[in-house]
Length: 322
Image (cartoon, rainbow, N blue to C red; front, side):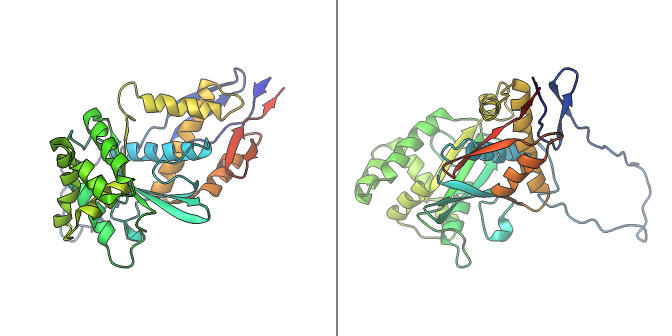
């Protein structure tokens, strides 16, 4: 019995070898056009150059960004809790500055009890944080978003602002977790007291409070507690040697498939990365229903079957044919 369903690849190609029933992955070569270095130019021949947009550029930072987006999509497909906001994913968008977001690399929209929630994500392909502080630039943008006059798409207390970094600072994450735990309590004065309990906590608390001045915002300690509750930090190790997140992503992809082979898991994962890349280079918006349609129809032979789990989770099955 062989597998005859295959997800269509984008920049990473997956090919079904009919004789061996194996999927072979290969990289798509990019065109590199050489240009003469010494070609003379004249004012009459000079053409204006349109600045490249973020969507048109490429590089390691954008590949990391695409993998973060694919990680979110895979989390939604697997029916796992979505980071920061929970709910059922309905839309993933990229480069959303035009939508009045200061944290603008990725925007994930979910629905919780009929109410939209949004996670605005800044993706950084390095560690960014220190043991005692969040990066000032990121926090300044958070305060700008927080205090932005209308139209401000962020709803305080409901939406979240996220920093996703490549690599983990364990000392930071330990201290940050303590502040996050304190921030969710109903007693704000107690939360402030806990966050000011020692020099390590104070330093991290102040790294959230002080950048408000650069954003032109005067804030109280109470508002800093609310901001800490609104910030979500997630370290991932995509692109690093022996990436555990990459292995986990392939493993989670395999568990979504009836034929959970390594090759099929890799193909699904790379297809999700390609979906995010296509979105970033295209319209900037990927509706989750459109993702399901792409997975349902973009294969070479037969269509996958889908099973809905209480209207929330859709599990993908590859058809087996004799």
